[in-house]
Structures are given as structure tokens and as C-alpha cells.
Image 1 (cartoon, rainbow, N blue to C red):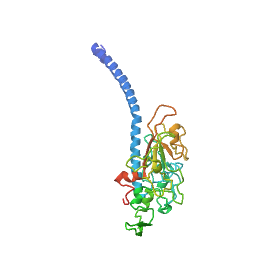
Image 2 (tube, rainbow, N blue to C red):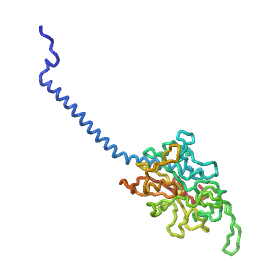
Image 3 (tube, one colour):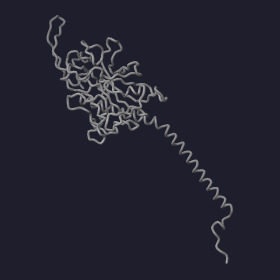
Image 4 (cartoon, rainbow, N blue to C red):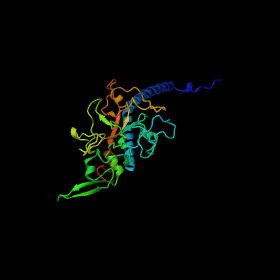
Amino acid sequence: MSLPMTPNEYRPDRFKNQRGVALILVALVAVFMGVFATLGLGVLRLKDGPDLEKETRLVQKRAVNHLASFVHMNDRLPCPADPSVNRTDTDFGLEDRPGPGTPCQRVEGLYPFLSLGLNERDALDGWGRFFTYRISPVFSNNDPGQIADTGVDVYSECLSRGIWITETTHVQTRENGTEETAVNVNRNPRKAKFCCPNNGSDGFAADNTDIELRTANGADLIQPRTGFNGRTSAPSQFADIDDFVDPPTGNVSAWAFVLLSHGSNGAGAFLVNGTTDRDDSAVGDEDENTDGDNVFIDRSANRVVGAAYYDDMLVSMTQNGLYGHLNNGSCARPFR
């Protein structure tokens, strides 16, 4: 009696060979898939940096929109948030401000996402690190009682349109030589204070606290761009918001805030570990953006490793720019 044949015994030899070829093809396909997957990951890694930079720019754009909206509603910039507040605390992300009409407790810190009604993600750049947010303090206090009419460092348009800090009387002379007393009534004193700041007699903003942008450490100042009624280049008209100029000269403007991503290397970013510690690896121009003073560097990226390395991403705007950002408004107009 013969035993039953196994499946392979009754298959022709050519089918046995085909099965071997099929196994080889499967192995080759697996190898090629692995190679292509590796190449694909390489492509993704190459795209990773530009994509995160693009994401950072989009987040910064939205952040500026919210700052401009806050200014329109409150006639001031929000104060920076305290980076030493515990990240799990309910106050994390709130502006560091004791109360209405009071100065900010700090001029540099985190973007105050909670005070703006946003989520923590809105305060993070594409690499998941917190933005550094700095203000010129004269733009964060909307109490018109803390600033004087005399010596106001303002846009010339502010005075010519009668936008005064408080109600002011003055003597004007008619063409026939007669004099009369006129009254300028400021119908929006908080906006006037935001647009036309000075330190007044209360000294709530110290000298050299207004933001300076430079092209490199110790190099040329960057002026507010055309269309924002920026400071003029003439030395006699390059008035500072800390100076007292009477009568006002030029169309005086200043950088109101800086919102800074510390780039892919994260050098100088706040660590948010219950302290005000920063990543201490910043050098050169990146270090200038982390030293806590009012000078910031805004220049093209240089990713060559060394002292000249720079990948910070910075945005800033003037007080007039903020008013004109969302609805084509202007500090030179007395009404919204």
C-alpha cells in the first residue's frame, strides 16, 4: 500500500522553483522598503527646521494680533507673565501686575497667554519653548493721572489735533492780535497716554527702559519701519521716549514690545522650572537677547557653529503700529 503524497511531491519542479523566487522577491521588497523608509525619514528631518520656523512665525503673527486687540480694548500692553510661577499653578500665564493703574512688576518674561484668554500653546514657539516677551514700560500703564501735560514727548500730530493727556487751557492769538483762552479737551486720555508717552513727574518708567533694536551687538539702531510714523533720522529729532521735549520735535515713536523665539537651539529661552532661569548656552548676539536689558538684536540667521551663530526669531511693533494693525487705526486720530 502506498502512502499519500505530500503537497510538494505532486507539484511539478517548476512550481517549487517559483516559490523560492517569490521568497527572494519578498525579501528584496522588504529591503527596498527599509531603504526608502530611511530616505523618507531623512527628507522629513530636512524639512523639520523650515516647518518649525514657519509654525513659529504663524504663532507670532497670532500673538501680535491678540496684543493689538488688547491694546484697542485697554489702551495699554499687557505686562509680561512671571516665568517663576509654577507651571501647574492657576496663575501661570497671567500678566505680573498688582492691580489696575499700577506699573508692571516686570518688563520681561513670558507672553501672558492667560490674561489674553489663550492657551499655553499660544505662548510656545515651533520647538515647544516659551517666547520671551518684553515691553517698553511706558506702554503698559493706562492711568492718565500718572503723566503730566508739560514736557510730553509725543507725535506732533497728537498736539496739532488737540489730543492732550488731560484737559488743558492755553492762550491763542487771533489774526487781529487779540488773545483768548482756549481749552483742549482730551476725549480719550488713556489712548493719548499710550500714544504719546513720557515719564511725567511720577517716574513710573525708569530711564533706558525703552526697547532698542540693533542689527548686531553695538551696531546700528533699527528704526520703526515706514508707515508707523517712526523716529526720524535727524539727530535733533531723534527724541527718546525717556526724554522731555517741549515743544515736541518730529513724529516720535518707539518699539512698544518684542516677542522673541530663541530658535532651534533654544539658547536663552526661559526654562519655566519654578525660577527665572534661562538656557545658559547663548553666546554673541543671542546672548544679547537674553541678558535682561533693553537692547535686542534682530538680524539674519547664521547657522554656522561658533560665536556668530544666530537663529533667534524676533517680532516687534510700535505703539502706532499696534493701533493700525487690525483696523487701520492710528495714534494720530483722536477717536477709534
